[in-house]
Image (cartoon, rainbow, N blue to C red; front, side, top):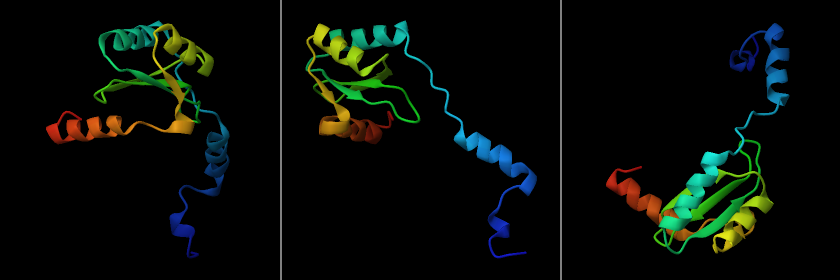
Length: 120
């Protein structure tokens, strides 16, 4: 037994299946009407909301992160980056590219407060 043999999982016969699984794409749920409804409700029931459009990744589709004045936030899948910016414009919410500007500090502060309260 070689030094690294104990770290290998499975036998040589199972290797092609593992490699094939690694090269496949992930299945991501598409956005739907309930996502749009949730975003619209969040925008209309909170004040000081800003939108942060998050690009597609290997794990998720394009998402729109909405953050209220106090840091309360929600994130939902959206059909496209263009759709997210149009949604924000329609609801008079400033929108930013999250890959460029990052996530606001007030959201991290909100999460920390909630965690200390035991809500997260």
